[in-house]
Length: 364
Image (cartoon, rainbow, N blue to C red; front, top):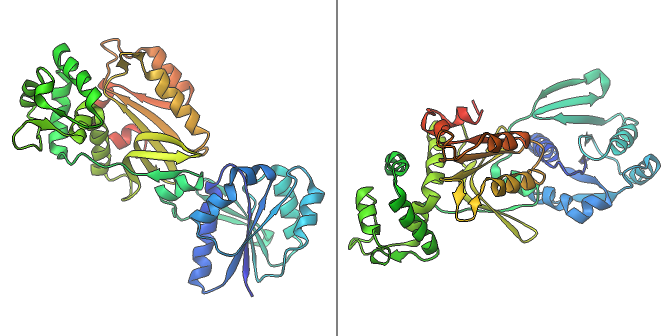
């Protein structure tokens, strides 16, 4: 006889994915067959939540029932057609309170039901009462699965190929750049799509020589688009990325840079993203919060808060900038606004004096 995994759908998909993968792993190890039952609502069906979970968890045998989220009678009536199974593994973490009550009440009538609730990485077996206990779930979700659980497709960027040792040396050089050199970098920003001939920008050759930049063109005549992107800001993303990679607080494959998360044809680019203890982190890296359009901190904060709602309750956003508090480029109002919106904000002084980026972000 097969087993049945019962899942209540809601906007918060990770507790469901976490539990499904956990029980699937146990049943597969024991050589047991299983099917899935999703208890959904019209709202969840419109969003496609069930399909996100189905794809991430590679679910083949699936039945979905759509209930009225605030009607106990409707929920229990529609559950009447549930077939007979060896064991019912019921996760009541999702759905509404009424759905959780209705589903719990229905399956408590079955002696072979086990009813669970997920709280973070903690899994509570609440029924049968004689076996009530809690334990830690295995960390079984990777970064790709996490964003996929919220309906995002992840498109990975590529690194410049420039050695990290150079990038580490470039940080103090960058902080010493004067107005003339900033003018050259701002001109380079217009060449990010295709690169440029060195002679096209007055003073570029001198700047490249001054910073010892490893141009790939042996004749030193051009800088390609990847090198232009590096010089105009991507180097800072790579600096943070490689610092985190060296510190080894994040497991392999769960740390990416230059990522695009696409959902409903809307493309959101992130400088650095990673998954740590089943929590999503995004870091925006700004060499300066000033631009021709003024201060860009509000735009960055808006982007972060807009996406927090779509990446789970435990998503974390941070802003790193090489603008300075001492130079009055970063004002206390910027830091306070970010803090009020649960966004961590780090400026030049924090980064230059930091020996461990992972600790700065509270990972260890």
